[in-house]
Length: 81
Image (cartoon, rainbow, N blue to C red; front, side):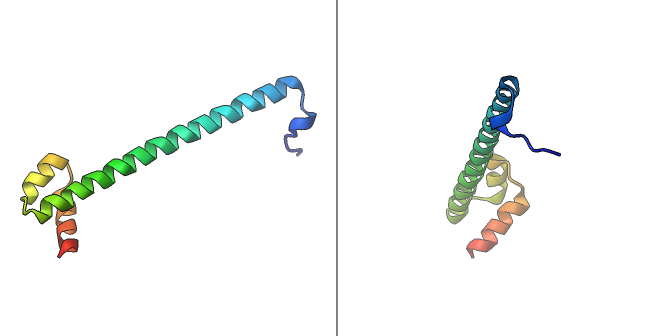
């Protein structure tokens, strides 16, 4: 099986390859950006939770506001001690 060789390909094949390549790159960038935003939001929420715990905010209230599981917040509180 011969691999695709852009130099020897027909103009139609080159255009098709280039279009697919650009689509793949764009899709990869979009996915990377989306994942980065999600991770950033998660980290931001966790920083807020830590500050709330340091100030003595009840776990029930933190869970209600952040939508995190109480168990996850309890683990974070244990890590602070």
